[in-house]
Length: 309
Image (cartoon, rainbow, N blue to C red; front, side):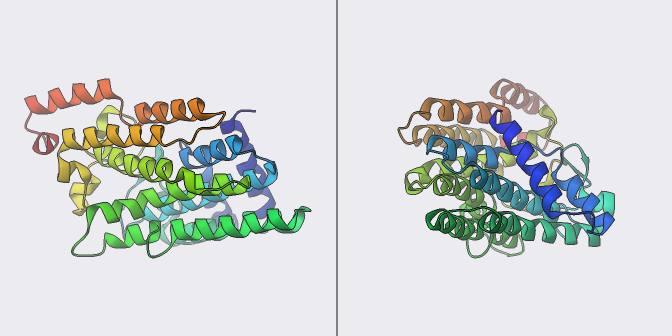
C-alpha cells in the first residue's frame, strides 16, 4: 500500500467510526462531500513521509495524524469558500460545500471537521494500548496542530489578516499556508518519536513556496485545472506575492524556496525519495513549460496578468 492509498484508507476508516449514521443526514453528506474524493492531500503525504523515514513505530498513530491534518485543511477550505470570504462556487472541480448544501450547513461542516480532527487523535489514546510515551506523542501532536491552526500564527490568524486594513504579506502568507506545512513535518517526526526540529526548514520553505504557487496560479490559473475560481486575490484586494514581486519575481522566489525545502531534508535513509517528492510537487503546482507559455501570451495581450509581469 503506497502513501496515497494508506491515507485514503485511514480517512475512510476514521470517517465511518466517528461520523456515524446518527449524525444529521445533511451534515454527514456535507462532511463527506468536503473530504472525498479529496485533493492532492500534500500535507498528510508530507507528514506521513516524514513519519516513515523517522521510524513509523506506531502505524495507527501515524494514520490518525494524517487524517487529523487533512480534516483541518479541508475545514479551512470549506470556510474559505463561504460568501463572507471568497464566495467561491467551486472547489476541487465541483460545487463548494456552501454552494451544494447552503451557507449554514457549510459553517457547521467546517466546525465539525475541526472537532473531528481532535476526535481522531483522542480516539487513538483510548481504543489502543499505547505506552505512556506514545500517549505523550498524541498530546504533542495536538499541541503542534493547534499552533498550526489557531492564533497567533496559524491558518485562522492567516484568514483573519484578510480582515485588516494593513497586512504584512509574508506574515499573512506564513500563517495562512505555511503554518500547517510546518505542523505537518513536525507532527510526522513526533508521531514516530523523533525530534521534529531538523524538519523546520522543509516545512517553512515548502509552506511559503506553496502559497506563492497559489498566488501564481490565481493569476495564470487557466493553464492548470486547479478546480477553483481564479482572479480572487485581485477581486478581493488580498495581498499577493504575484503583485508584490511581479509574476516572474514570484516564480523565481517559488523555485528558490523549493530548493531550500529539498536541501533542508535531513540526512536519512529516505532523503532522496523525499527530495524527489518535493520536486515532483513543485512541477505539479507550477509547470514551468506551461508557465513560460502563459507569460509569452500575456505579453502579447493586454491582460491582468501582463500587469504583474
